[in-house]
Length: 185
Image (cartoon, rainbow, N blue to C red; front, side, top):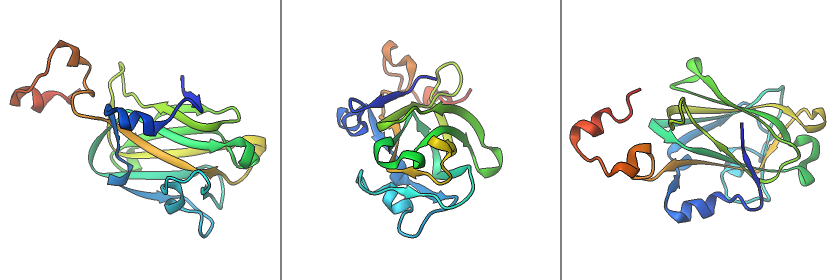
């Protein structure tokens, strides 16, 4: 799996371009564990100085539940090995489904001392974008065999209208019939 990492990868720049929008604010977030004062609020506060810190056994889980089926194109995670060392994730599993009981692993990402934003493209099959009710980000292991983990920020991207379907370069399809069947597999 190919991920983009580093200082030149910035989710906010992509959001400003108008091709994607951040949809994490439309979801309900929960964590498998956290230290007091280091939870979801810190993970979503747009500050690289704050972070979520887990407090328990691996794997550490971030659960993101949408109220309606949502198309997801990328997940951005901000981690900093220089600041967090053994708390930095080294292997992450991305799982999608309709609820906790039917999650399917869609990506596994190995991180080598990440410093900055990591972009994880989310695809279903044959390069189709993922439409899901729930995303689970599981930290499988940390650098230096660390027990707890730090994640500084997570952003979830969905394509904006007109940029999400691969047939777009053939023209805009706007009939009711096409709209009804465009997401059926």
